[in-house]
Image (spheres, rainbow, N blue to C red):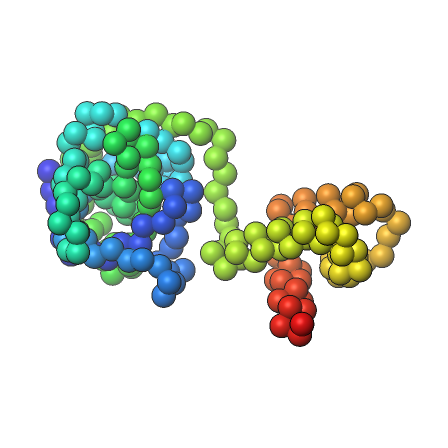
Length: 214
């Protein structure tokens, strides 16, 4: 087993792989002292990066305690790096083999790991995909935040019958029409979730500005 030493990782929720250029000051970065590296086929890499998967107990046993952190003395981590010579992802697993969190690498560190992977034999990792219908978001973290914020805000406006504000936001997107309130709500929410773009970024700024004036 080959190891990579002295990496900075940004483990995030298993459902969101955050690229290095989206790292935030508020993120809790982990300074990794040592972590095992596996060269895997590209056909598996998308699953390791994005899918909900569960690795075998045999693989878990092989990586148990192999990842070490500078600030934490405990060794009971199930973590490793996967590389297909195009990209690298760090994955932490639960003791059941399910993904807990994922991290991309800084660009220069990823390049060094790819160089270290060259010449290694491919490892066949036994795993199963738990969610075959998982879709990947192409929004940035900031865009996802705006999308979730607006989703909650629009729903709250309807539930609390703040219809003047709701109609104002709706007409910023679709203009004036004769749909009833619930048809407008469903149309706006569906479009927000499926077609987030600059229109909704503008809407987000309008909502935030409305609160700042109160």
